[in-house]
Length: 154
Image (cartoon, rainbow, N blue to C red; front, side):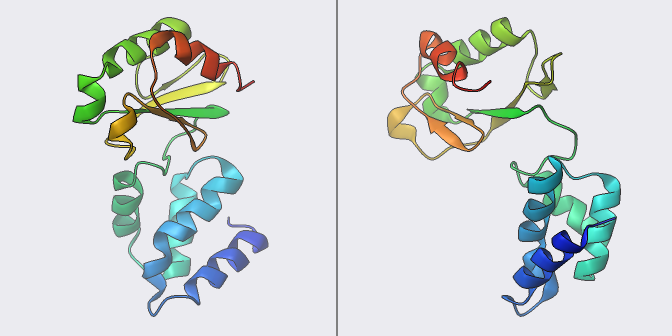
């Protein structure tokens, strides 16, 4: 069940649009910000509030890379999966993350500290390879810088 604060925040966003469903990404972000991810129950509640089919909202949630439909770790690492990053060595970055955490893309470390996910493009091709950690962009990476960056996240 959505909290009164979540409902109020979603209704505030809804008021900014002509149609309730136009606020669906904002609504998903509001709930995810408070709960860390979007459960099936959350999805049903949000869809009901926005008067839209649950399947349609689920399609938006699963399409949008920054909405999590499963629990994630305290920190989420998005590794850029664009052509530029691949050309500039993102495979070495991904290998370093797998080696350090012992998980593959889509998995969370045993201590629930990090979740590693691919993302189609971070929009910084001139500074490839890149990754996003909790929304903070880290570019011009090499495997040794990955460890340096991750030390900032306890």
